[in-house]
Length: 401
Image 1 (cartoon, rainbow, N blue to C red):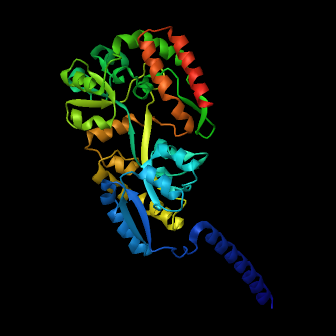
Image 2: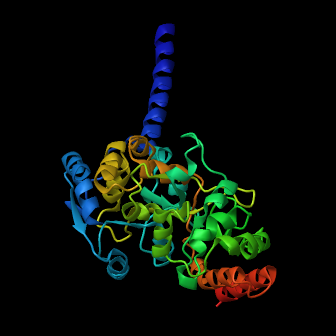
């Protein structure tokens, strides 16, 4: 009898524990997935991405019975804005990270939980798709600035060494200022080395519409008026910068991977370095990322998200995207596999501390006054502190309009 009572207690305890475990499994995602609401999802891509995603799409169809239509779209941003607003368009869109603010404001995209895949990508690439405290995209490629130098100018440096600012000054720096139009984008790494970033961030690292240009900004303005004036030519252009580097009249150039073909950056003629500090703090360039958005108008947002997170985010898919497109991977594993690519390694390593180009609406109010003010300072058309502080006031006024 005692045995029977003991077994009864054990059975009750076992059933209670079993129920608890079963409930936990069900709520942790182990329950069966919902039946698809559609037999196909559509992904808007460019031509290279269409080819690179064929394997992932085939695997997805095999596993889920849901086809993936890879549609090459020539004007994805404007077409998505118009079509998704009326419930049309693709299930998944590939586009630049700085679209996120506009897409979010129009209620056209869904948050994406990357789960355990988040750590497979570089943190600044992931954060590029953060908006209002949530993630809205899966990054797959990144771009940022670096210091490109004629290798002959630094033959005495070891392979692991890079020139400091004094050494760059000695060989000369090319930097296009758009024939007097200014270029705060390419000057930004020098500016941030004085501490002046364009916007402040909240406790979660998200940009807020509050300028941070006064933090070291006057010191940067004084540099522009002094050393900057002697090194930089307001009339310089992209073509003159390319010519200066090729001829050797300038030893280095602050530019991006888009200069690869024109200069032949994949040859040993040039080395790619991180940008050295001018003002004493880290030189931080802007980072741009391209990635996958899930449309709020998706015919089946569960399977659209599943394709992105469970298939596109896989290292095999990311390596295939790099192999086909040649674009610098945001995925760590794909980047590590690109050991023999000088351009990928050079710019990728130079951008580890790059910060995403702000996608907040206030960014549109910044560029014009910023560029014009820098040119005015270089041309010494007034006291650098006065011009810089007036620029801040003008930008604040523009942001309020």
